[in-house]
Image (cartoon, rainbow, N blue to C red; front, side):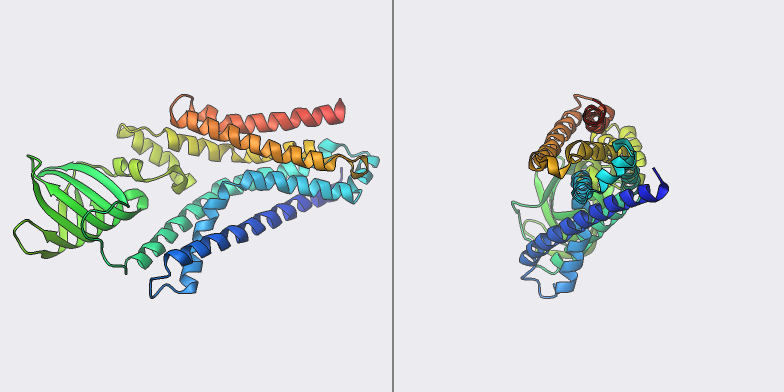
Length: 362
């Protein structure tokens, strides 16, 4: 097959993939924007542009999860479009096999997977963190919560002076920084000593630093403190393991994060799984192209196109079930993260390859 024809087939696939990804991006952003407008409707300085920007920063990480399905649908759509216009018929008549005209799409999918792992994932994680900062700034103008609340983040810890219970409305930097904090402090005999309310709490070496704190002690009037130091036995690794999710850690930081968690004696299986999934992503997207080709290379005049499309969609749902099952087994430490991450990619690519081999070569 000539380089020009291969470039044409690859370009058709990339254009269709970009159209599908862009359409889903716009739809998800619209839904997320409306939800954020509802949440921050009571905030006076919540402008339309600020909320739209925060929503725009959130969407890339959401779309990262549906990238394999976008590749599957994009490949099926491009192959069906080529078949409908009889371009595949002409290519076959010129001696081009199915393996040759799906090769450009497979190569393009591998390139998209490498880009998604090395560039898109870190950018999406940074943008998601930025959106959390913007949401915290919008929420920071709301009145500080007083007393015990039934929502937010709860954390029990032990310090040099006794135990304490921390409640925070939200967290940033994987739990290192907490917003709208209420702390209940007890002595070494578990007797209540005081309640502390602060705008933020930042974890430092052996202590939490509470900013703009107000201390309530029984029988005494409230005391305003610019900063309040609360001792803790928690480390940054322990807090990050508790608060962070694997999706919020950029790809290039995952190896260091896994090493720190293991050195601290913590389980890092979920982060190992995320790291291996990102490594296997290019091969997964390439396997999706093989799977799409097995369901979309039938000529339109032979009929049965609707059944093929439904079969491709059904295979996508089956892939989701297999991936979810492997993830759950890995997080429960029943199977190795390496096996859980690479098995869906291997099964998808092998199933598509064998189906295409049977259809083309018998």
